[in-house]
Image (cartoon, rainbow, N blue to C red; front, top):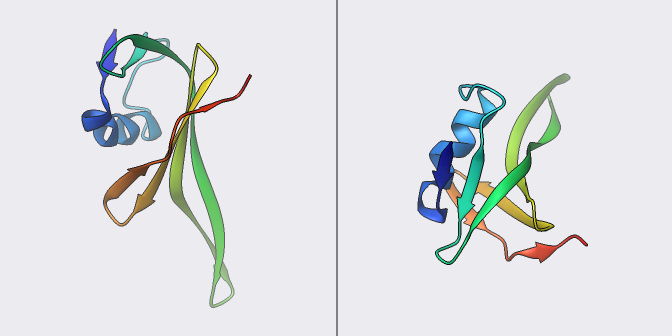
Length: 89
C-alpha cells in the first residue's frame, strides 16, 4: 500500500509513469481529511513536430479517485501545478 499527499505527488507520478510500482498496488491519495483510493493514472502526452520528426512529451497527469474526483496535474518545467478537484460524476 502506498499513500501519498499533494506534497509527494511529483515523485509518485514519476514512479507510476516509469512503471516502477508493481501492479496491482493499493495506491491512496491523502487530502488531509480522508484517504481516497486511486482507480486510474494516465500521463497526458502531446505530439510535436520538430524538424519533420515527431516527439512525444508528457505535459501532465490525470489521477482518478474512487469517489469520482479527478485530480489533474500540469507540468511546467519541473513544477507540478495542481488544478482544482472536479467531480466526474
